[in-house]
Each structure stands twice: as structure tokens, then as C-alpha cells.
Figure 1 (cartoon, rainbow, N blue to C red):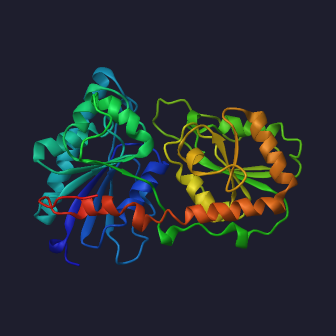
Figure 2: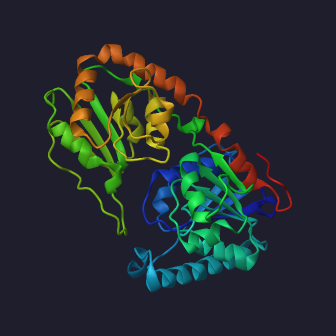
Figure 3: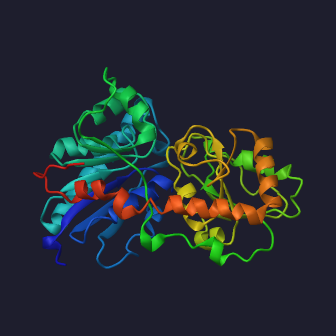
Length: 386
């Protein structure tokens, strides 16, 4: 399709490391049609490596690097934060001008997916250029004047249900409901990336645990390591720990490559799907996960899913002993006991995995992201309905 017939959409990504929210954002972008050309300006271009591996009928995604000086990259408050945002506004303005010069048309929208506050520069660009924005909120929003200003700009905002209380707090609204331009959504998986079925793939020799997340402290790797080290069946239980090393972050992180018996460590593995398909038990140790895309992928792959009883999304959606197993939050001994039970009853626990797969089939990307795709590809004058 000729570029003159395309709608050009900017995707602003100022986060300098990979994460599940970027995967979910990419899945949402791919649900638009081929009339949209996305221009991703990213502080971590590697996060978008799987873009353009989709079918020819899906949108094209061009990725450009957003350079952020190390001195500014980790700044989240004070004068340094404002210097950082001023720099990012300048970079966005230059990028938008470059797109206009190349295609002789203005971008039609900007997609913001890191959260209000983090995406502040994108809101400033939208304000200065009258560019409509589509905001995706993948987790809780911090309460600040910046976040409140962003959220009150009346741009289309899509949020995970777990983020609603923080959105209400950030807006300081006296009402229990959000404004009409806010719409709830859930994540989903595209058919082309549907996980390999471990129940078919797996050769049953020894139980294998699969863990996949970043090393951010709240993801809970330390809990898993503690549990595995005290496991009385450790000579029979193997584990694949797949991790993302956060870069340019001031947040606390866990240590990787700790000696654990029969444990294999994999940093950002390219064969993640294969490692998952050759495992049996998925363990989530994240605390109050806003959604848990890795959990959904594990359910779809037919793994025996183990999650904390923390009141988060999957704790409400799944039933202990029927389509998952739950342990007491922040309790390595409780996790240890669940793993012991599964190891001793692998054959009967396969029914739990099968039931979990049925839940995953309800989360098809073409359905879960339909409203987001419609909002992105709608004309400025179109009214988005949900």
C-alpha cells in the first residue's frame, strides 16, 4: 500500500528496558488493519524486535531509537525530572517534524503506553500540535499533579481494571466512576504467537519449573529461589528461570545466576516458547500483578500454574485445585509445599493444566484489543464507542 494512503501513528516508548506492558502494547497495535503505519520512538528498540513478523494484512511498524542521556534516564522527580521531560518533548517534536518532512502529512495520533507521568512528554506534544492521543494504562498510576494533568486532557484512555482505584485517586474525583473517555480492557494473545502446547510437546521425565519475568524486586525472584533451595525433592525438580535485566533504572532489582540445584538461568532467551513448552509447572511470584501476561501464556501453553493468593487479577479469575494452585503470598514454605504436592502427583495435576487452557482460550487478542484498535485507527472526527 502506498504511504499516501496510510495513517501514520507515533508510538512513544521512553522506558529503557523490556517488559510485559510493551508486549501487550504490540499485541494491541497488531489488531489494527494494514492502513496504519506505526512509528515507534523507543528508548529500548530491542523490545520491538518481533514487530513486522506478523501477516502481511497486519500493520507495519517502524522502530527508531530514542536516545536518553544516562544522567537523565533514571530521574523521576525534582528539577532533573523536568529537565528530562523538556529533553523528551524536544526529541518528540523533532521526530514529528521528521515524519512530516518525509511523508508530507501529519501523524494522525500518538499512542502512549507507559502510564501518565512517564508519558508526560507525549501529552505535551499532543497539546502543542493538537494531536489526539490514545493512552494505555497497564498498571497502577502514581498520584501526582503531572498524572492528574495528563489524565484530564480528555484523550481516549484504556486501562486494566486493577488500575481503576489508582486512576480515581490520581484524578481526585469525588465520584466512584471514571470519565466517559476511560475504557477498561484485558490483555490477550494473538493467534500467531499462541504458546506451544506443553501437554503435547513435553516428554515426561522430571518435573520442571518455569519462571519468566524481569529482575525488578517486586517480581519476586528471591521468593522462588528461597523455595527451590529448601525443596526436599530438589534432586528431582528442575527449573528454567528466564529473566530480563532492567537497564537504566533506579528501582531495586534481584540478583540472577544464584547457585540452585538443577536450575538453568536464561537471560532474555530467544527460545522462550520452547523453554516453556518443555516445562511442566509455571510459578508466578509477582506481588499484586496488574494483569500477568506470563501467567496467561503459561495457561495457554498447558502448564500447571502456581500463583500467589494476593487478591490480584488471576487470583480472582482462577480456582485453587481446579485450574491452578495458590500459595500464601510472600511465603516460600507455602510455595514449597505446593511444589511438593505437584511433584508427587504429576499425573493427576495434568487435569488442572487442561482446565487452565480452557480459561486461556477466552483471551484472544482480536477480541480483547478490538476497542483499542478501533480507537487508534479511527478518524479524528470519529466517535469511539465501547
